[in-house]
Length: 416
Length: 183
Ligand SMILES: Nc1ncnc2c1ncn2[C@@H]1O[C@H](COP(=O)(O)OP(=O)(O)O)[C@@H](O)[C@H]1O
Ligand SMILES: [Mg+2]
Image 1: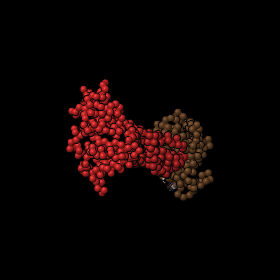
Image 2: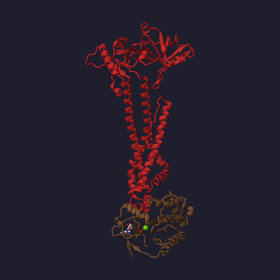
Image 3: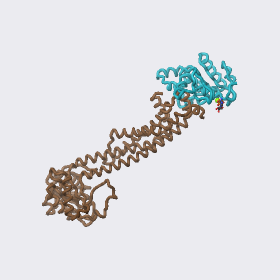
Image 4: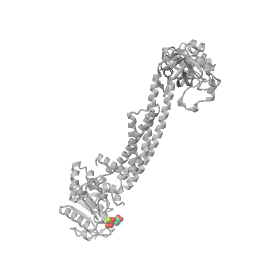
């Protein structure tokens, strides 16, 4: 029998048992849905990470209390020990800045603040960041108008601020922001600079930040709890000098910080050195773990789906013994019967796969719509869905099909 | 002919290459069939033989035409030829107007006639019918036997199993079976 005639046969037979076929394919549907949704989301996540790290594109080194290593899991960190680590100080930053390999080193601290206000205008959900001279370079920001914070602002603890574009638009919709006053947490600051728009990173706008001198910041916000906390503490942003590699600068900063903290050669660092690339690779580790988990889930549900198909095909072979007998009596060869039942299993699982692909893309699309994560489906994501369901169909369909094809015609005819 | 359990169906299945004898030999067209492999047997069933069973002859989900088409699909006849043969055969058994009825919508007599049309599809030399009238009333039986007679007159060999004298009287030769032996 020709391939298309056989294909027609299997579709006819599956349509005859619509609900049974659907339930059987459900395992495959769920498996492929999982694969497609997670693959698309991971692809989207990877793209976002790539883009955003590229947009940062800086060599900035972050000296912090702890190494940010997302991939290693919570068990890796001794939080009690980390909490006891010394704070990173303004003096540390000044010492680092003296190194010949370093262009800028700035101590920063930041916090979320409720709202910034100016004459009844409000900018909500902003963060306030203490920074210093050169802080725009270490954070790769561009000052569009006015100037950034300078040494004098720091020394004199001036009440000045440099604001992101979002704040500028919301507080000063139709005035020149330079020279204006704004209020945060009951303190008034004069605007001395406005930053160019930067866009969002991981769904968080970077344009709702107001910078104030770090010394001013510490005067208002440096509580004992703040100092002791792991995440709320200060960090030092370090920018290597022109022509100096990040690795070279890292070594020097590490050596200097060990010296300043009086560490012996056998003691571990009591500070963390983080770079874009170290954070990037640890994020990649997360996506790798997600991949492995996904492969596990998918393999599991495809296995369950495949066994379901095998089960139903065996039932179907038993039910259709008479049909097989008649077909053999009118000239069907072993391989005609084999192909008929195998195709039925493959079509079943391919239909499941197709529904799964649509559902997976639907879920990925929905997530993209509701969150900032932009799922991306590549052509090979869809190909993987089809290939996997075809493989499952063949693998789990071959045994029932062989059983059908090997039925003795006389047993099949006598069967009632 | 023979009483129930005398081995009529068994003989029929051996003749039809659906079963193999425990001992003895079966020559079809002067060739020993027992040495044939599965594919060769399928080929013989497809080209040389046509079957009509007592009941459950047709695939219930297919139409009359599709049932008649079945042997042609396995012998790889082209689409145009298939259509031609199917309509000729259905006309021959007087069911041209039933072509697109599903087989479970047909009466017992109609079902058997479709089975005959299907048996004829590949133009086989031999038609084997195992109690084809076993489930029919006598009027329908007469119609069916008339059809068989016509086929025989056109030169086709029919082997019919029955334990009914009214069917047997149509035959040119009667073989009696008892306890698995010719008598
Ligand atoms: N020649 C034979 N030798 C031994 N057993 C036989 C022989 N012919 C038939 N049988 C057995 O007798 C039983 C009934 O045979 P069957 O062909 O169904 O009879 P019928 O169709 O005449 O009612 C079957 O189990 C079959 O295996
Ligand atoms: Mg019998």
